[in-house]
Length: 167
Image (tube, rainbow, N blue to C red; front, side):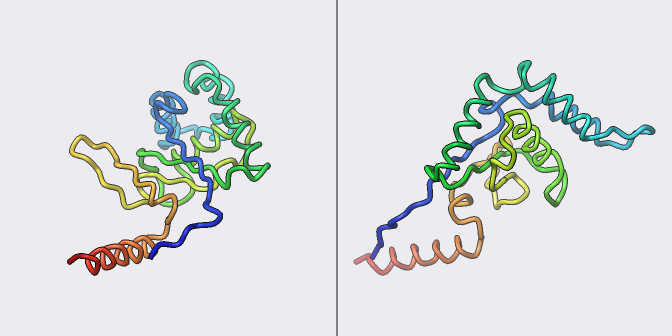
């Protein structure tokens, strides 16, 4: 028996590459500046330079600022519950630093929408199915039920329910 969800969450899930912008050169630059150098690179200065020079000149999609501003307003008006970044790219660290979180900060800074994203999903923090050609199959179940145990319980319940209904 299924119950109707009275107040379902309204979640906007955004991909990065080719959707919000072209980040291949940005990724290469980030990886270059984060390797050890005799004179260390200031990541805050690098972020400001990227936001000022790269993002408005082809890295970010046209009207990205308008999209993020609209999403921020919709969150404030409680028309949507949250905004999620879901990317196939791997993060370069095991915590909330590294390339993906640096990109998130740059996007939010460029669009003047700090803390727009409430959840960041990337190849390293979800159980992702990887295709033969290296693409990540994005499972929206990771957005709705981010805890793996909950997903396993739901899947087990669904399988058992379906099996008991067979004649």
